[in-house]
Every structure is written in C-alpha cells, then in structure tokens.
Length: 210
Image 1 (spheres, rainbow, N blue to C red):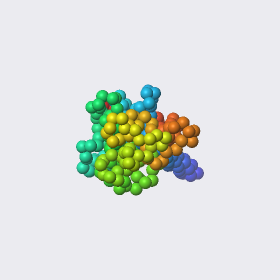
Image 2: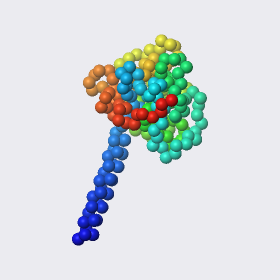
Image 3: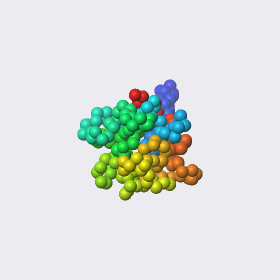
Image 4: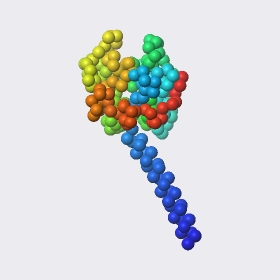
C-alpha cells in the first residue's frame, strides 16, 4: 500500500511539471513578434530607445553562435545602441534592415537574421507578426519602400528622402506589411496594444541596456 501511495504522489508531481512545460510552450507559440511596449508613454517602442534598448538578446536558438556573414548594413544581434542622427532611436531600427529589437530572436539556421524575418525559413510564413520581405535584395523591407509600401491606414511618407516610410522609422506602433488586425478600430494593431500577443510587457523585456 505504501508503494502504491508513493507511486501516485510521484506520478501526480510528474504530470504537474509536464503540464507547466506544455503551458509555457503554448504561450510561446501564441506570442507575436516583433513586440511593442511603451512604459514611458512617449509613443516610441521602448526596445529601440537607449535606456531600454534590447537587440535580440533573448534567443531560443540551438546555437548562440552566429556563423553567418553579417552585412554592415545590419545591426547584429546584441548590438550596442547606435544613434548617429541624435533622435533617440537606435539607427538599426530605422534603416529598414532585418535588425531585430526586443524579445523573440531565434536563428536556427545561424545566418544572422531572425527566423521570423528570414524568407528562407518556414517560420517566416507561419507567424502572425510583422514581416520582413526583400524581393529587390537591397536590404530594406519592401513594405517600407515607395513602390511596394504596405502600411495600414497611411500613405507612403518620406520627408527625409531616404526611400523608407517615415512611419517605419519613428518607433511608433505603425504596422507595415500583412497581418494587421484592429478590432477596436483605433488605428493600432491589436497585437501591439496592452493585453495583445505582441505587447512586450510580461514577455521578457529587461535585458540589453547599453
């Protein structure tokens, strides 16, 4: 009888631990990347600002080594905060490249680009977050450019004349590309609003202060 009791306790504990792991996995699968959070209420994604800068430090990749060639146009994963134009936003979040900011970076094929934004990876087509696509191979997200601009609720705007939509450079929650959803019709993608699956609070923010 004693052995049966011990077995039942052990089995119950094992099931509880297994359940916790499954729940975490499901929550991770439901998350939408990249994420947006604005704790200081200045309408700029905290992940691209200096004091809260995070350059893809969190990784679920099997290898933490980046083996692929890294174009200098990109900010490498884990890069320092760079702000040559002095506007308070990391330059690598403004050049249209696939430089990652915030949690969720994963690079299973070790080519230096997050799999969510890597067109050669299956995750590029499966996730619901904002995408990177570069059909003309100029290292700029096609959804930010004039000819191929896709921006829900706004036209292509380029006051600084750099060929990239200004709304993709100001750090605001302005969505570009497919996947935009706005059930409350307030102009902001539901994923990036508080409580949304792409809102950064509670999803691993806090690393990467440079």
